[in-house]
Amino acid sequence: MVIFNYETDFELENESRYEEWIDAIIESEGKEPGEINYIFCDDEYLHNINMQYLNHDTLTDIISFDYCIGDLISGDIFISIERVKENAKEYEVLFHVELLRVMSHGILHYCGYKDKAEQDEKVMRLKEQEKMNMFHVEQ
Image (cartoon, rainbow, N blue to C red; front, side, top):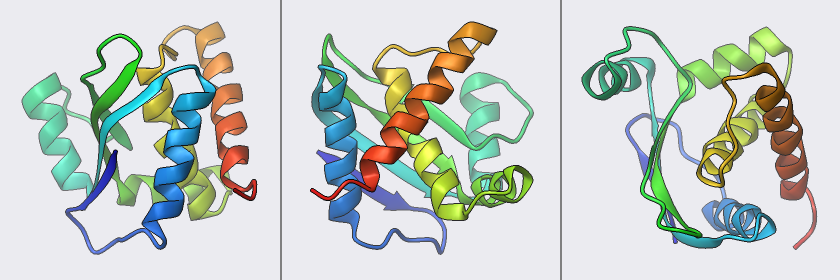
């Protein structure tokens, strides 16, 4: 089950389409959807979480808390809409495209993908693109 929470003015249009997409990502990785909470927020909200739980005094676009058990994918994914907008400008992509990238990024971490090492980051970027492309496929 995918649940969308809003701590900012932003809201997804057609939440069910996003939920189907997230479930499809998880299933495409041979995993089972559990409970995924997306919390859309602003920079200040996410910065506070970054400080409180990770002791990082930086802005970020996403923080995920992994509650997966085996192949059952569950967790809380916090996304700063402000950072996503800034990243979209910086990378010269549409906001919607960057949002899909970030949303899939959190799920891919739960599926076991890392992004700290250079080779791992390359794999993560390829997987993000693969999963973003799935959003555009007619269900």
